[in-house]
Image (cartoon, rainbow, N blue to C red; front, side, top):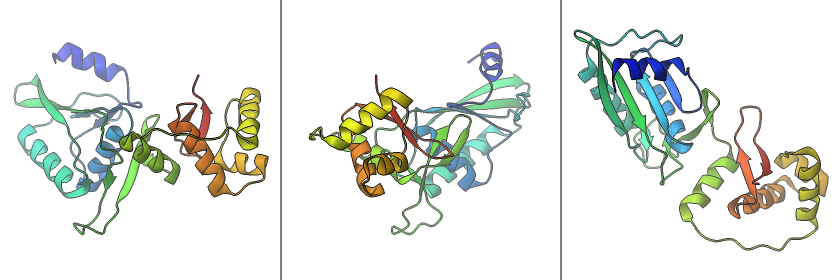
Length: 215
């Protein structure tokens, strides 16, 4: 990537798939950003750029790459795949571009200990933030990884749900539970089953996940 291409990328600003960091932060924090990106649609972390978009560069790119590798090995489970590219912005001053693809092995989680029993915490990207994934989002990611087909009966609950979505466009687990007079657990299972069948789309959100029609 050229300096001009870097400037064009930075001009886009932070968002769903783009994060700026002055340098590699503490290990668990950078692990959180990497896990969130790979659990969502993939993206890039630009090291050497301030939150306001100022390209400041880093003096020791090799050291930053080492810290990045350590963070992934210690705190990402399973490990996150990524590639790095060094872009010279001034003599002896670089920007490190970290490209993270969407994972086929998600959900990835951030672990705080090296213990095998540590389940860790999964994160996803919501707009320009990395937020903790809800249980529904984690379950959907696991279903995507399994790749198994799904069958279901289209009953009264599903009919109520579709009519509600036609009228209002979106629904949460709690709203479906109240609408159909069923438990939150059953409402969640219904919504996730329809999501797995590609009829619904799950939208992770910091104020609460919601579902929409997938067409």
